[in-house]
Length: 200
Ligand SMILES: [Zn+2]
Image 1 (tube, rainbow, N blue to C red):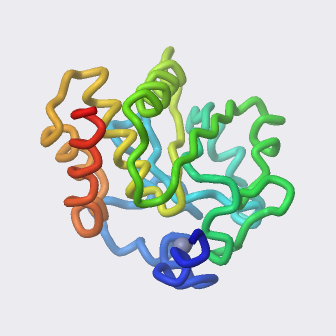
Image 2 (image 1 turned 90 degrees about the vertical axis):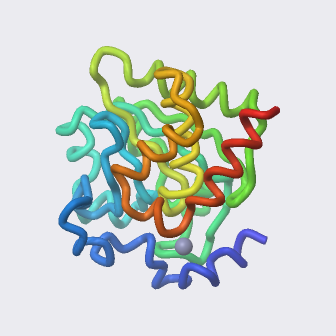
């Protein structure tokens, strides 16, 4: 199942794993050079999955520290999208080794669920509570799934609902205002998933 998804996003040429495909939108520039990424609300980085190659090439660990990004929340499942972009590390099941961040005192949390599916209300509440905690004291957090759109957008929308009592529409609109791709690909899906979670 997992490798079927790769076919849709272009395999090793996966459009979501090449930030240079997304540099022409002047209103929504990539937040971190080397990653297809956007700041949402100033303290949450919505990003594609990092890879070991990108971490080295763009010095991402130092970039994260410079930007005060001190936690990573990974929404991918072990072994997913194995044929996309740089592929996955056999030792971790992800495109990078989480310990490369943890060894540099960047916290790492993995709350994976299957691409294009909806997590339970309880799981989402766990994720949002960890995200809320990770942002305390003006710290920043990177949230990623594969592309940094569907699952990532859903978590951030739920963060706004949980912390700011936004309604579903308002939460999605807020996420979209910061990240143009949410408009084009995920609007209906994001809304349906959010409704599913909220109507548990
Ligand atoms: Zn892909």
